[in-house]
Structure formats: structure tokens, C-alpha cells
Image 1: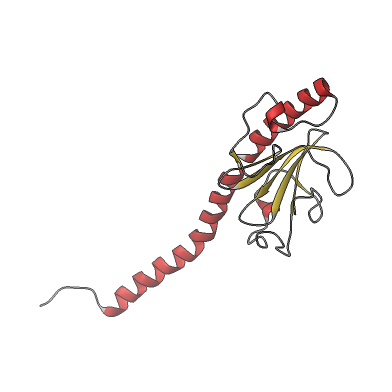
Image 2 (image 1 turned 180 degrees about the vertical axis):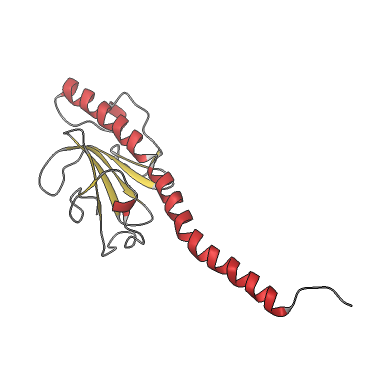
Length: 158
């Protein structure tokens, strides 16, 4: 007598693995995205504090070259206010769409999500559902980011 698995048993195992994968993959993607955004808050806070000190000393907004920090990432182009990492574009200082000054902001380079560090010391984010810069968000960032969401691109990233 031959021993082995029947075709039905093999199909059931493959089906169960497929169902488990379909459930686990979105959760994995959320965890990876959350880990990417974990780099932003400390970097923006450091940029904001250096911007605050430099502004008090100089009397106006400062570029990265004038601040007493090494900015995250590398400069691209001629701008001394703008650096890039693999996932984010960081800007020193800035003005939001309501005319309020910010210490800095970061734009996610994979989807249209922007995090601002306001002069009040608060972090906020906005997500652009139209995808005008890099693409509309594929997940609801309000469910994974521990900061307050503001209306469409209030930070002025795009």
C-alpha cells in the first residue's frame, strides 16, 4: 500500500497558506511604513531645535549650513535648506498654507504624505489623496502615525 497525501489534502494546505498570506501581508506593509516614519520625528525635532536656536541668534530663518547640526541625508542641487534621505525630503524652516511659520517639514518620497514641525512644538501631518507629487497614499496614515492629521497639504509640501 502506497502512503502519501491526496490532491485534496494538498489543495487545502495551499489554500490555508494563501489565506494566511493575504491577512499577514497588509499588516507587514503597515509595520514597515510605521518603521520608516519612526526616523522622521526625531530628525524633525533636531532640525526644529537647531532652527530655533539659530533663528534666535541670527534673527531670521537659517539654512542647514548655518545651523549647529548635521542634517539627515544629503543636499541635492543648490539649496542649503533641502536634504534627501532614501525615504524623505527634509526642509529647514518654511511657511504652511495658512501663513504660519514652521521649524521644518519632511515629505515622504513614496506617497504624498507630509509631516510638519510647527513652531508650537507640535507635529502634524497631511496626506494628499490626489497623488499630485509622488502618488496617492495606499494606506490611511492616520491609523499608523501617532500625530494629528491636518487638511490636505496644509504643510505646503507639494
